[in-house]
Length: 216
Image (cartoon, rainbow, N blue to C red; front, side):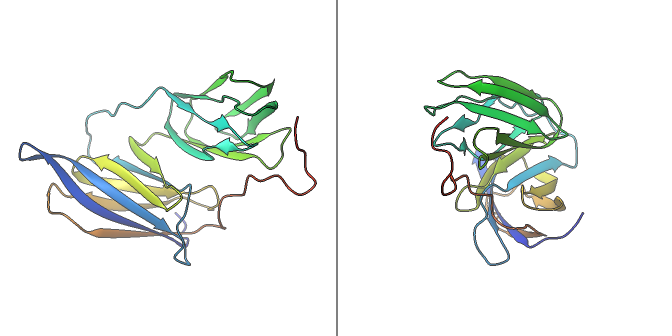
């Protein structure tokens, strides 16, 4: 896989129950080549040895508020239904031409919650036929553990001890980057792993351009 310029720092701290370690809190701090936090990066991990299945929610939500997708980036397990409520006082027309999922939710308003089944792994990029600046992203993943970085570039995951293949993804990067991460069964563990990936910049802003549409 291609190398880029985002640094993912992982600090691992073990959690225990009745003296036995059962999970590890993994903190990933995602920053770019300039040391700035990266929002909307997806960190996913797959154990290199077979483990128990992980149960994920069957439904996720992307709202439309202030003529923007909220949140702008989500990660879901393959087979998840994503609801698209419209909290704006205008109609939206959500669509995607992505290979992983092509769909169209024609003009609708109010708090109706049309949903879409995301049944193939990959990145799905969405737009609105009415408001061209709206851009949203759904990462559909087969990996059992994943999360999305917040505005501070932070990601938290709870993992069993073991060795993992970790993938860092971002809508603005050309290629995914994979590395191995060892999560120790040790309550005193505290170490850092770095992964270098490359992006073309931040997520596109979902702000109405000057002279743009105000209500539809």
